[in-house]
Image (cartoon, rainbow, N blue to C red):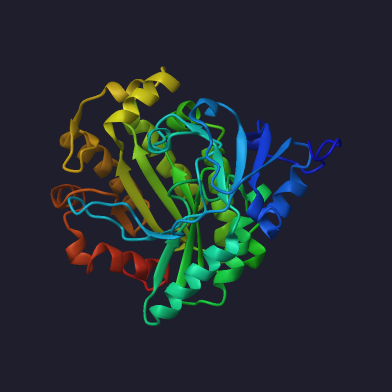
Length: 372
């Protein structure tokens, strides 16, 4: 233990169960590692050799691992040619999440639940700068919320704040921060139009039952309104939309809440995605969240090998949410990882009519108004 004194740094509830911190020796003196260790100085510290791997048997231990990452930081979204992908680029800052959403794909994607943060942040910045310099005419829609939540560890790491500050020098980049918690500590470093604060949306019953540790919908939308009033355009993500008794009323209620907090012009785009998962995830959900009855609905194996709700069921859900949002005046809607047929059934158009989904979302991200 590197301090006998209790931490005076206030941790949000979703981080209060942390038990210890491990750090690769090579990154022990980085600014990020020093910041984290200062903020949780009351926890036991293990300094490990570079290349240490968390044992799978320790999966239940609440550990934060500050790692010297040697992989690629800038990645393409792991889509498939079989379905339309939004085409955003992932800024890979770490793995796993301290929340406990029953449907989370990370349960099956990673072998352990250790919270990993890439503490060699300067290497990440160097890789991004090379990519920007080598592609001078390209615009980038970036996001950090693919393999972790963008903001759950922000009180400890300040990762998003530092990334926002770094990207100020690169006007060709727009960063989306996607989360299920509320942390606006990055805002004083951000320029509206260059950062898109984003929150996951779901039916209130789904949030309450399936997204343990997350902020309520009301809290997320109040934060979104705060950002919008400061000049930021926000993003909302209905993904996954879950089939359960009473889903029509539940998702309609969420649309009403959105309309109560945000004006359509304050929203850059809204994604809609039906629940889909790798087959092995069902086993994890059944074991970790036995009360999650939605996994026993009518699923088929899609063209990407994932389990998907039967097309008529998911079209009905996607259309229901989309029509509610449009009645409320919201635009910039798109489907996440869906086929041409489903796009036509839900919207009566396809990404081709928008000039391609990736281009369309770039225009929305950078504030070039385009409607569908």
